Image (cartoon, rainbow, N blue to C red; front, side):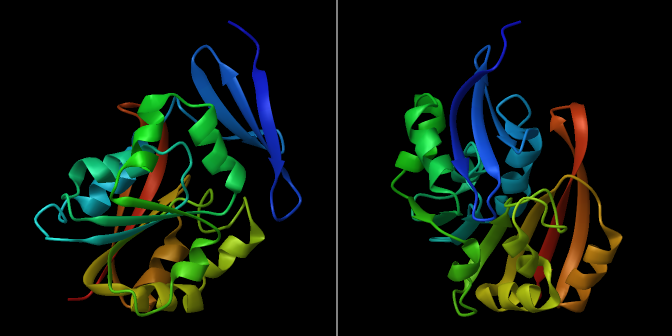
Length: 222
């Protein structure tokens, strides 16, 4: 097995280091030396989109907000389900991640970025939650979970005030889906107190293998 090739690095807003690596056909992103994501274990990222968007295929022009581009697996899975008139806005706070998708990954990974239904915004997803958007789904994969390990600023998304802002940004019946590396009973209660009907899915990172991840599904009442 080859050693990692380090392809690039970039500083986060908190002053930590994000690095891109390649080995044996797979890509990895590390944060301060700890693996954050890879192209080897993408099943839960794809399920995030499938669980959030499976009911939107029959809508004429659903509007989706995705927080966190990663390696684009959530985006691609969403596009596979969404109709031709859908609009998907992707917010990625780190410009380097968008650039890595465009320059280092192959054409299959770039398909989502080039889809006519997609708009990529470089910036914090928080700035796109204006409380009036009427979004049909909001998908968040911006951190390791509600504890906001990657960026301190992400903690506001999971706070009572942040969840209320998300609630106001969804259309009636709209879905909030959040990827997490772990379960969090206190966060489930917080979602419920913010006016969401909540279910929790425990899914595998690689089909039937790999670590178990959590997807919080929170629906705004019709």
